[in-house]
Image (cartoon, rainbow, N blue to C red; front, side, top):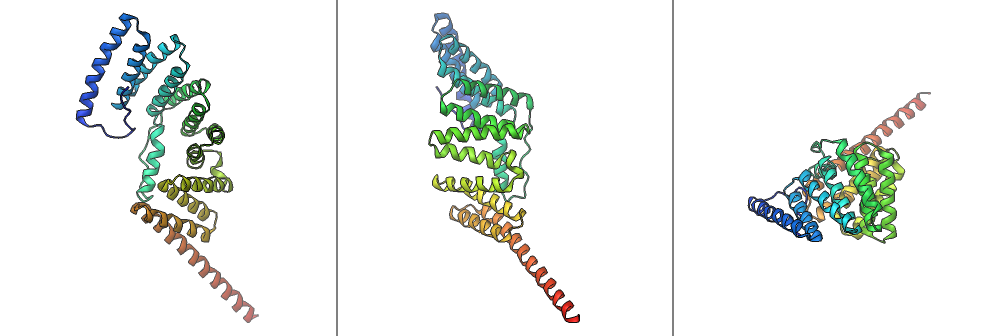
Length: 303
């Protein structure tokens, strides 16, 4: 099975040419295995074809190959293979629906200073609905790890569809499985999704703050410095919006220190600007309070 190329990573011309040659060879192998009645070998060839199509960004063609792989897994009563096929099909429909790239786009926007809007991702509900269907099939055919992955991805898909309650419920289930598995990485992913994707807690600052504070702890334990900076910045924004200026200054300063430690100049600059605004608001509040106090004193003296 060929190695899977990370989503969004540009493919070199020579790698693309090599992938096309492998596809031709595998298509011949599929034909030969089918004629020879070698069902499992044919299934493996279909899966390899699907991965190569994925690497080329040909997600719909990859889905066709995964469906052939699924058909053979069903014929062979291969439950693990079926779970893998359901997951792979679901992920591709989510990619076609614009789903998995939106969170990365939003974080990239924040990394570049927070003033640039996130690149627009066109949401295609039909593809996302299909993704949810196959994620659910994956959940039904999986162990605890598979159920965690399925719920996490369903939560992201529901968030993109604007169905906040369903998004939150699925991310809560993902967190439950992560806790059951004693997986810090899983907890980080689930709590990060609850904190940063559209969900029921968006209008509940206290719950959101508690979630993000736990996320900061997990990021620290896992040495996920960039995510920790994003979380501290988010805490600063929540504190600022709630009128807790001193608290927001503290969070922005922590974010600056961590960004500086990892050499992230853009994040450091963004948080420094936010710190300056928060400090300015604090000084303005103090100034207005002083003016009001002087006005009261003068009024009392005149009386």
